[in-house]
Length: 506
Image (cartoon, rainbow, N blue to C red; front, side, top):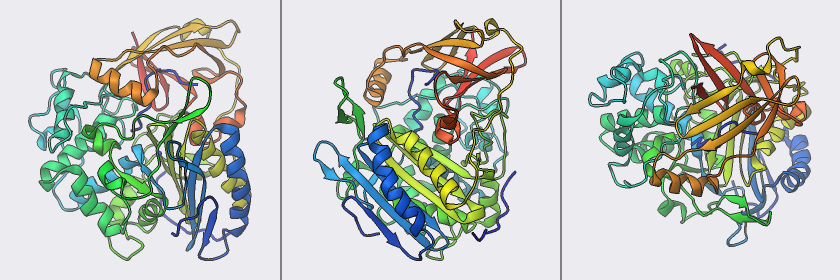
């Protein structure tokens, strides 16, 4: 396989949801477009995806693979359990947190224009912005908004009352009562608020709503012609509705399509399909030039997005550039982001060494592990790479009582206790809504706000644990790695870390 050379930079702990905030139609089969280099893997995946969707629990799934001018698209199952309409290769879906890479690209267009300095404090652009702690807002730099190191403790915050032109501003206003988990650059904590603040900065400079700016400055120049930013637009196209298992175990359509507009820059509103998402990824593969020949962003700033800016040095949180996570899978570094939506997840993985893009969306709880199996199969069967878990096991030297305690972040509380086994801990998680508004939104997103069942974790080595009973290969992909649990000391503070989120020991 020819390598294309690019310069590239080096069970759940919390009950609150990871609001993260990841061609011609084919009724239920695949479409081969372009050359023949993908024909072999296309045939394999056409058989594997339906099997895995049934086994793992994903009523509808759509994916696309691009490499060296060839594009393979495949759709399986049903896009909307309310209607029974089939999933097709042009079906759109709520993008969720993959939006964060689009938001970063948009932010950097303003950096390129000289309107934003990544090393400036965010209060230069939002002078009235405040957090609950005196001086905390002034310490955060613009780049820390888009690499998850700003420390703002508001992961699941979702103001829902404003849907008009002041929606994003309403999120910023709500942050005035929010604190921080750590000082900037001390740790990594998944940041819906960071990207929403970045979106508000974009609004102040563009003079337009974030969604309109995204449509005009990202969608249009790239040629993402079927991508939109509202349900009223999405209803005009084939659009998927998420799915959850009901009380009887049968899959049912989600009762919520979109998250509140206030979090649009973090992923609450953009709606895309596979061909458009591949076009966006190809723009980054080409260092900022869209497939239609339009330059969208400078090569220098595209490279900055995939150059590591922070590394927690733990298998459950890959290095982060600007917007892009940079996991190593199969011995090669990818550019990755996932997205959650009500009852669905999406994934975008780029392997620049092989000029390879894998984009996918699925409904139901099985879609996340299906994304991992899809990527790992392509690497193993198409590229001939060896894909293994990102850790080695070693004997523990610390007693399990070392980790015991109560750990907290916004709306999340976890009780960690020594388990029955010598190398086991038990974790019980609770979601503690901050308001009735939060409870209503997140119950629709999650399906419940009850305490999660106690989960037993087994030690891999000191400070790293895996949910007991899962096969090691489960952790080979990025989604699986999120289930690992690590512990970190920062000064005299101890943090538990899982799903890219930090919880502080109280």
